[in-house]
Length: 181
Image (cartoon, rainbow, N blue to C red; front, top):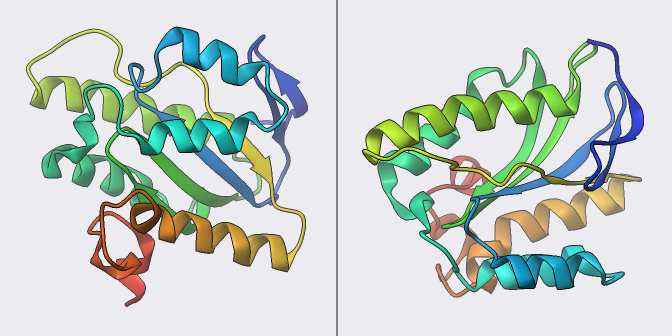
């Protein structure tokens, strides 16, 4: 698949480039009320405010279920080292943060879509439900340099502590930090 550079599907702008490290956030479809999501989209610092709202644990929070969290983690790990390199990740109750470097020939959009499609079908089956599971779009931010990368990994792995879900990053089961600890 060819990399698209800057593009949009009419929602958020995305940057898709070979071997560009990206910080990605994708969320459950009901994790933000529509009015809140629309208000956040109009603000210049919407990513930070969106993360704050997501950390509030709105919606069904299906990712709190260990079976669903494991499904998402295993899906992301499946092609690690092949289609992409995972540098950090954290599965929160209603959203997922990932720092990823796509391999040559693998677009970021296709990677995220594969994770979301595979996990949505299986999670809905486990939960005995139908309908949307993930929000249709995702946030991504291009990592500019080593300092930005270090700060982003720190943010991702400390997100459960900041949200009051764990006392230390390594205490959170669904994170790259636990695997390194």
